[in-house]
Length: 204
Image 1 (cartoon, one colour):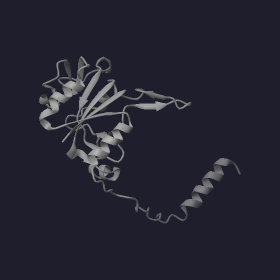
Image 2: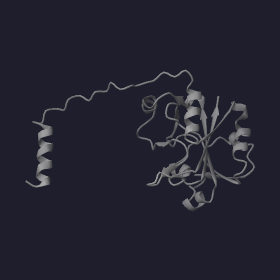
Image 3: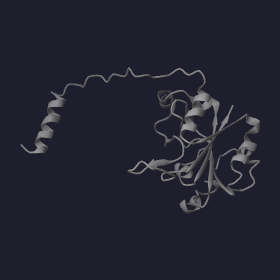
Image 4: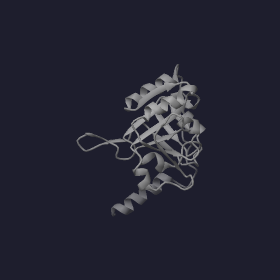
């Protein structure tokens, strides 16, 4: 008996006589308790080497201007609220207004500013779904510096909470800190798959 036949025989044996498979147990933790999701999210983001700043709504424009002070050019989604940019003094390119920025144009922009769909406290993950003020996926993957605004009302405690709230038909981008990987010797390399720097502005 060759290996292919043996594998197929094992599959047939595992499938049995065509009866429906037994139900999959789903007794895993569906939700979690957390005394302070904002504080937990802040800690997890710091673990991932992201920078977190907090502000109230009236301070958002000034906070963003300070975070972006060293970036002379900025890409934003076409529908980003204009009041977010009132303190920024650099050049702003709106993606999709009137046409999408090319990859070369995005590569020439040092920073991008977006909102988000949801942030997950227990994992320090920010999720974008191409909704309002988020833009398309390429917008947040090409520039080297991503500044993301997260409102405290967008924070959920665990991943099951996030999955239940998100629409799986939308293009979801899950961000856990700046882009990072490691080589075979476990040397950390940043910026390979996305932004090298992630600044999160928590608005509460």
